[in-house]
Length: 137
Image 1 (spheres, helix red, strand yellow):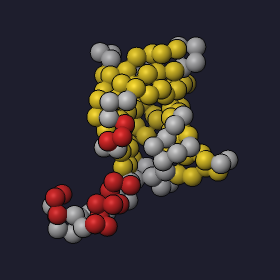
Image 2 (spheres, rainbow, N blue to C red):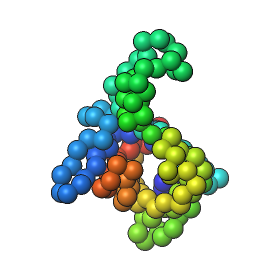
Image 3 (cartoon, rainbow, N blue to C red):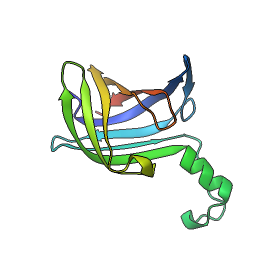
Image 4 (cartoon, rainbow, N blue to C red):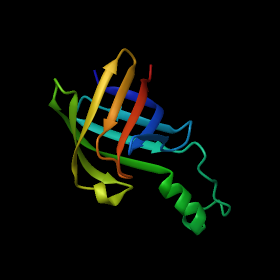
């Protein structure tokens, strides 16, 4: 059920009983889960700034900071860790948050129709992330 192409609908973080939008009210992103055991995830704010220099290598400190804090992408292989718990093991080969590169992490993915509820129990910003994806048709 989890395999396929998914588009991000919402992404919230919960810490100390409070929920907040991680990348703003209309985040952008995709999740690809292939039958061959590979995955890729790209998540970002809808309001990333354009670089004034029109050159990715010539961003200002502020532009670069906004992009780093407003996006994350990672990929690798996956396996179903526990079907009853909807637990999936992600073997992260590389990530734009380098601390995750090489890690094995657990996610929880529950599919109902064309919607997936995706939980990251230990988010890179602390707390727990709750994402909702819609299946691409």
